[in-house]
Length: 115
Image 1 (cartoon, rainbow, N blue to C red):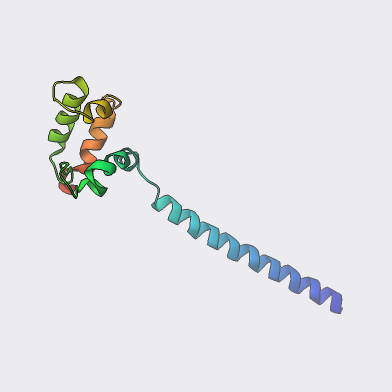
Image 2: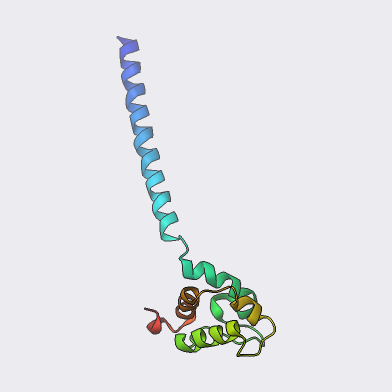
């Protein structure tokens, strides 16, 4: 009888541990998905080295934060095709597709312009 009660308690304890573990894993997965970077954020990471975090440049390189997305897209295309003189941006922009340029231009735009 004592052995049966101990098995029952062990089974209940194991079930409780499974439920608690599942709950913790569920919360962890939800937090990971919520913090998952978007394609735009990933693309914009390379810009941060020169243009500052979020496009807010702390120095002499122009800030991108809050700029009109059309302006940013046109500038990137001009850097890419060589019609706008540049030292570094021409080489960087060469690697961007039109779709990536559109994504980047909206990433740095004023929040009201991001759509």
